[in-house]
Length: 189
Image 1 (cartoon, rainbow, N blue to C red):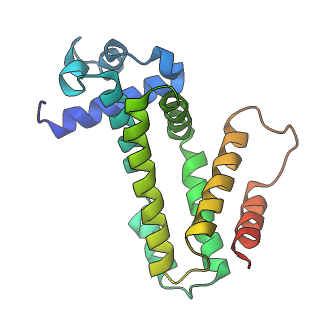
Image 2: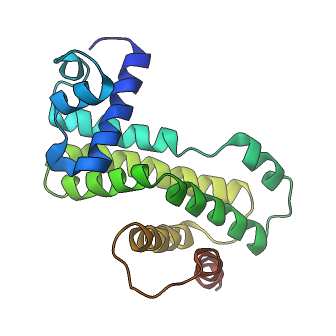
């Protein structure tokens, strides 16, 4: 595999743009090359198979959605309680909805993984690592709830994001207020 990390990142970002705009059917190595403005065959040199390309896109999504340390620092100084947990979850939802192309690309990848065993394995590993990191963060921060509550919050946030970015319930609602209610209800014993 070529070892130019900047080029690999450029290709992954172009792939995410193609995936978000054209869906999994429109994602080809050639389409990624074109979106990146690179010669045909470049993406194939970095990602030998479609599963390798799709898996790399999954990893890149989480890199781009990573929290900003400058935002986390003041939160980390606060008392670990339900209000703080709510603010952390608000920040997660803000990042997911603030980068709709990444959230849509992740949805596309998850659907594609249901049909592709190789991608299923790669993406499952990435999602599991993210979940485990969330559980560890929650525990280390002394926030309410454990692994089961974090799992339920993942399910709820995934649904909220899906409803916001695709044809939803058709009834308007306040995302921040809904997020706060989700946290409160899912972390109470």
